[in-house]
Amino acid sequence: MNRWYKNSYRINIEHNLGDGEVDRHGHTLELTLMIEHPSTDIFLSYPKLDETVHHYLEEYDKKYLNELVKFSGLLPTVEHLGDLFFEELWTVLQGKGLALTTLEISETPLRVYIVSAPISPGLSG
Image 1 (cartoon, rainbow, N blue to C red):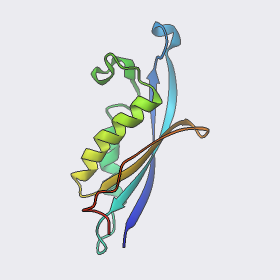
Image 2: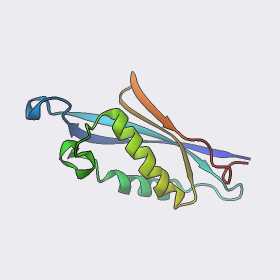
Image 3: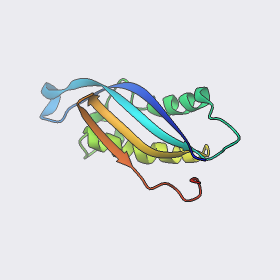
Image 4: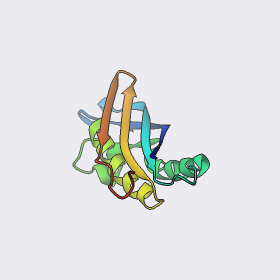
C-alpha cells in the first residue's frame, strides 16, 4: 500500500525580473508538496513535517530573492524557484525517510508550475 500526503505552504517573497529596483515587486507564493510515505505501519506526523518544511522555507520567506547568493546570475522566476525548491526539499525530506514526488508552485491559482520526479523504487510498493 502506498500512502500519499499533500501539504500546502505559503511564503512571501520579493523579486525583480526587469531592470533594477523599479521592477521590484512581491508575491505570496503557494507551494503544494506531494509526499510518499513508505511505511504502512506508521502515519506521517504533520507537525514534524510542517516544522521541517517551514524551517527550510525560512531562508526565502520575506526576502528579496535577487539579493540571495543562490540567485546570483539567475533570475528568481517561479520556474527557477520551483526547480530549486524541489531539489533541495527532495534532499531534506529524503533525510527524513520521505519521498517528495511532486512540487507545485504558484503566484496565482491560474499560474502553476509543477516539478516532479520518478518514484524511487525503494519507496514505492
